[in-house]
Length: 50
Length: 398
Image (cartoon, rainbow over all chains, first blue to last red; front, side, top):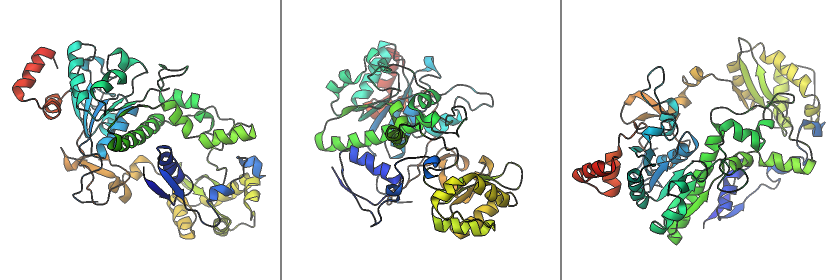
């Protein structure tokens, strides 16, 4: 199995998730602020933002 | 991209029992990656195993746009799998195959006597991908799924569209492509593992589960919030404003997606309105009012002009193109690949959306006429010469 460096964000991470599930060893590098997906509220949908 | 390094799947033999879109599309990805493909079809079941073959008005001569797009780079052999003779040839080809792909309903290949369990004994390295709609087990095993029915039962149809819309699916075989794409990932993974172990495997791909996987985060959020996924239409759950906005002219539109406060300030300056909505929360709360203001601006401009001005301002935007407009663009020409049989001036197909540095893309050959390259396939895979093939045809009625 391969070692994979993951520099993706948002949906690019779906590609590396598939590789992880195929058994590869994935290491994700994020900025200090973290992937912007981390900032998304736990409740989705416009109403939760109102 | 040019180069003389072989493509990653060159030398891999794939036997394609796929039909319609999902199976053949999966195989097309493998073929574009360099695999040597034989498509098994049955003339007596055209339209089923025939991947949407059939004479259409306008005379595509048995090769529809679907077939052209999805079934390139392979040879076709016509075998009746309901006869012992046809099956015997199929089994000989399977013995030589690295990969087998089928998207029949669960149980069909077993009933034909060519299920994985039977074949793996003779060819333990075989990677056998089954792509039934609901997989090989479970309560809906054996159900027939089509693009729209799979989107209905995966929940996808209630995640698309806007609130109060009737359920709406994504057309043009979307679910088939997603199923085919996941199957191709699984096959490449299994081939990679086989290089270490020498052993193949049975891949049980569920097209239903592929559909669910595409809305996984929505279903996950719904389980947490205990509310159904919001149907946002053209809007986003994470960015605002976003939508497809009406522009000057008849039925002209431009999509805009504001990803940050800074981008919003750029757009707001172009709108020339006295409004703030500095925070994302403000913009979600006043999305309707913002949309009205945006359309007051876009409504006076062509979509191309909206796209240009927002492009300069660094705000993601794209005019909505129609097929004839796409065909006139430079990036469209980069997408197209000529067919070997017709050259640069002939009809073209759409290439892979990625390239391998150092390897030239595979030259595209057009989708085969049914059974047209059966002899060639028998020669190359089984090593038979012309007299032997003639003999086989007499005995086994290819």
